[in-house]
Length: 142
Image 1 (cartoon, rainbow, N blue to C red):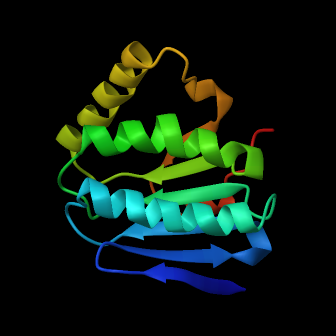
Image 2: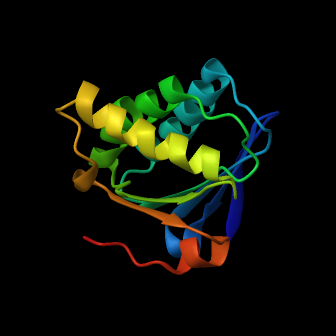
């Protein structure tokens, strides 16, 4: 069963109950940080209200053209850590087919490691996928 949790100018968020997964599809080429945070805070409210119901999030960023480092830092260092106690531990990312964007993600991850040594990517099951089907079918590493 699919339930729409949110649909705004920047994102559509649906819950796939049968696979304990929330899918967040970013709809524009750029999402201002405030709108990104507001969207994820709303997702977080649902997750906190339903502990251990959602174990995987798919973040579809294929429409993005602009990589925003500050949003990525907040998403990893604050939001993901806050969601982990509620059961959200697996993340699947769909990136644009853009070598520059993908390189920016890699650089951004390295910057997080340097600037936030207390954050550990290995505390989460994070994988990059090429298709929605691959993201949905990937098993969660406990």
